[in-house]
Length: 294
Image 1: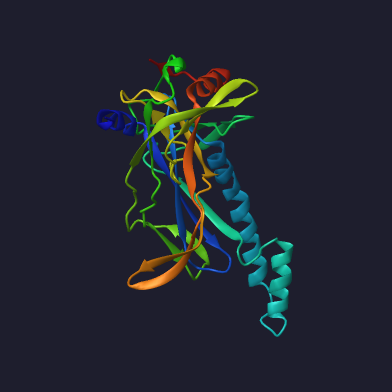
Image 2: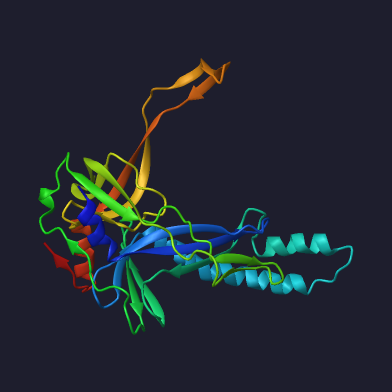
């Protein structure tokens, strides 16, 4: 049903890769998000919460660099542990704090001098503008649904993104206490589509702003396009909510691997929420960003 539509949308949908490290661990944690391109001027869309994560990276990294600089100057004597503890308080670092956060945009542009963004004041939506590139690694762009009234309850739609970060081109530099991107390892992650039926519409002050689907949007698909069977974009994946179904099981005795066990189970339904195409188009018009519709 969505074979051709997925091929169409994959031409302008790209992953954002992130790596993070907590203070108490040398493990590098990979993560991902999604964006999709609107036009050949370097404009793309993603979620506001993705932009907020990107915006955190510079202050987080600068804070840790300053911490490391002071830490390296501490005298190696009996007061070292106490001094490090005081330094952690100064820089607001705990053992579970994220102290490093780095991002990279995959297959978007050849190079860039700046990245601008505009976040929606009310909804989980943001415009990205790549600047200073010579080549945009994209020649096809999103085409938006012209008449959103045709998106009705019961219609099947599909989302596309990069929810499973299988890239491995990163490492921990122990000598410099730094997480780094490397030229070795896998530098990509497979795209992943997931379909869902339109269940309800999300409304704010009497105006629809979102589309609810019967299946969850997966972590990493945030910012990816929501499209119909023709590949026309109807919205953007934003978040997943979890509704308690009430079919709870408590201290239920079951037979598992030949042994009796008592189990608990609290059931939820996981529903994807997407930003409505009309909200997206209005926001693009507000910032004079050109786009196509059908």
